[in-house]
Length: 261
Image: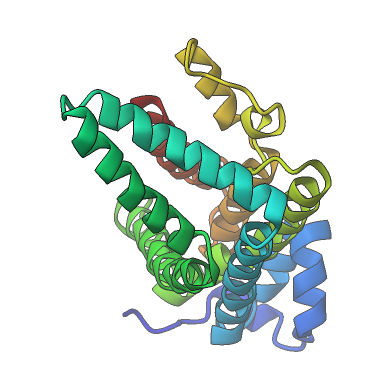
């Protein structure tokens, strides 16, 4: 991993006071560009990306648990899972007795996965997968910045640029939790497709509305600004485009999986 090397503007601003933890947390939401500019004058700190990431992952896990333990939401999730599983059974060509036997097994598995143990395993998966996914995205952006854009920066700075905006994920999960508890509709994101509770089984084109997710697009924009500032780039557009491109690409993978169901 490349060590942090101060750039010229850091030397010219050696007397600048470093932002506090709270200033960074609030600033990345209210004044992201200026906040990252000030952060760039100092060596990257592990706490600048690790703390927001841990908070975000725990909030995601907690929100998922709260929603799954809600009776109304849990019932809808179970019914949707049963419906999908039963439809697959009907297409399997099994005999009627075999189908009924399989249904009992499916019901037991669904009850277990939507119960307390299921919530615990889900939380563990969120924490582990979320951390790995974060490192993957930060790694991709660092490699592009270093070897494609030829800008000066370290992997630690890429981690900060990707990690600090995790507070937006916290806000997003709070919105999702409130919406689910108020309506009883189970949603996984803040896209227009989810909020409108659309059924795309007969019209797959509706899945395109999944790309209209204000919080994920907001976070992608902030990450792009952060990368540009921390890598001393005068062209922030290329980093914003890179961040949007990665976000849309992974959103597209999710949409494809939904369309294949």
